Image (cartoon, rainbow, N blue to C red):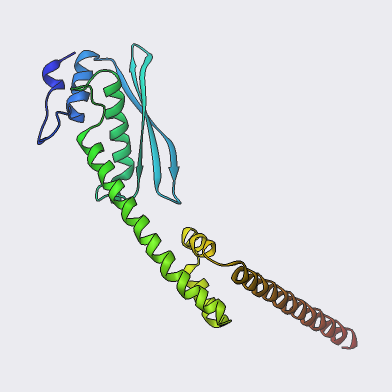
Amino acid sequence: MNILNINEVTNLRDADYSTIESRVKAFRLDHPSGQILTEIVKDNESNGEVIFKAHAVVDGLIKATSHAMETKGISNISKTSHLEYAETNAICRVLGMMGYLSNNQLESKKELENAKLQRKELLKNEKKLEADIASFSIKYKKAIDDKNEEAIDECRTEMAGKSKLWDGVRDSLSKNQLDYIYSLNEKAFDERKIKKEIREARIRKAANDSLKKNLNG
């Protein structure tokens, strides 16, 4: 193993991590015919999560395997390059598994920075969700207690598509408040059913009138 390449570290203050570039260079020097193979294990467009798998292959045999996950938009880098970022981190980790690292660390500087950013972003989102749940719970409960169906519909519209927010607000409702909401749902269902029956009856009447007209014509 080329120790000089492995210990190349740039712009690091508190840790001595090998750069991804130096790990790849060292692997190529030690194994000229070796391969680093990557594949996408998961690419979820709905939440932006992508998982890459990387294999280090020497003499036709897989010597190490590693994975890396990245979420689109969770950091400045991943807003535009989350696929590339996940692939690069998977390569960095698999070479770490092969021993191409310093101080027995598998994480690259970028991986650590990204993890910190993700934790901060998750904490920020959790706090915002808690605040939104508290705010909407007050608004929604008041609308229910006042039996204000227009205000209830407004709350529902604002919470539409936000499952975590809706779950939190719903969990804050009392049994009486939930019963009232269920009764509104049943009422709305019955109204839709009646409207559907009326619409279908009008369609049938129009079809019959048209048929009679054609027969008489």
